[in-house]
Image (tube, rainbow, N blue to C red; front, side):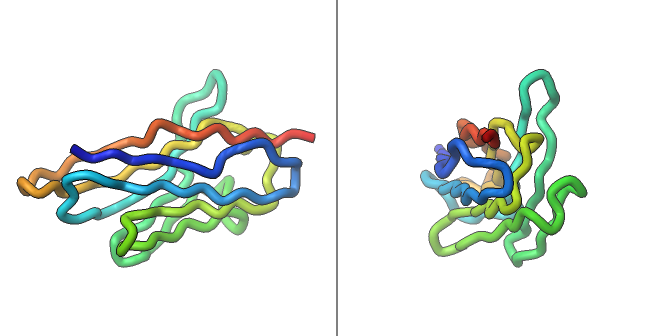
Length: 120
């Protein structure tokens, strides 16, 4: 019904930048909140930050001032701009979206994840 596809992960040196994208497609009527989560090896999945349909954002304390979330509602896409990356940012990054499908039902959907590795 709805697919979320992330892209933009990879290997970057400490202090570098990456931009992740997550595009939603399928039987979409409307998309509400969208967000990014990450899961490092041996750790639980944690919230990186989120953005409402109106553009209000919130961030985990660990990424405030370094990461920026934005969205393009016309493209059903959310972005995560990551600057000044640190080794501890290494994780699989997942996007999440609350989507109202054409039948009226609202469900949460997850992307497949994209690996971000910060290493010299």
